[in-house]
Each structure stands twice: as C-alpha cells, then as structure tokens.
Amino acid sequence: MSDAHYFFPPASAYALNRFLFALKSDSAARARYAKDAEATLREYGLDEATRTALKTFDRDRLVGLGAHPYLVFMAQVRLSMESKPESFEYF
Image (cartoon, rainbow, N blue to C red):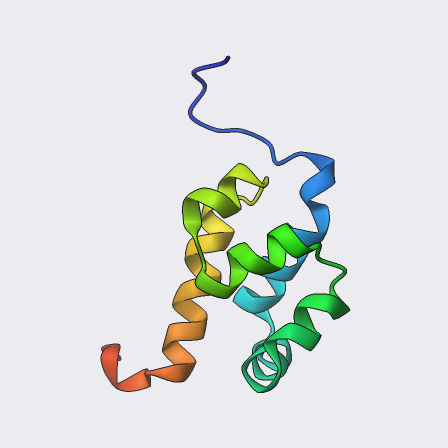
C-alpha cells in the first residue's frame, strides 16, 4: 500500500465522480437530485452500493468506492447551500 497523500480515482469510479462533479457544478443536476434523488442516481448509471452511500453522503464509503474526496466535500457543500442557504454567510 502506498502512503501517497494524493490518489487518482480508479476508472471504475468514473460514473460516481462524474455525478459528484455535476452536483458541485451544475444547478440543473442539483435541482433534479433534490426533486427525485433515486431517478437522478440511476440516470448517472450508479450501482446499488454507490446509490446507498450517496443517500447518506457517507464520505469514507464514497472514497472507498473511488470518489475523489474534494468532489464529495464540494457536492455536499453545494447541496447544503441550496437546501439551507441561511446557514451560509455571504460576502
């Protein structure tokens, strides 16, 4: 096992990272996810284990499935910003 700080996500996690990037970057994807999470997860071709981990945004499990930690964090922040905008300070 390597003790490298950074790892490159495996190709097998492409769909997961693509989905997380969409949540981070695309307001339409976030709106679809907020309206019907299960349909959106299926739209991105995510398997059952990945869909289960995403339902609770289990960071450790998602990273174990190959998600890039930054994308997990930012997707969760963007979802929180939309669902609870009052909890974020605007500059």
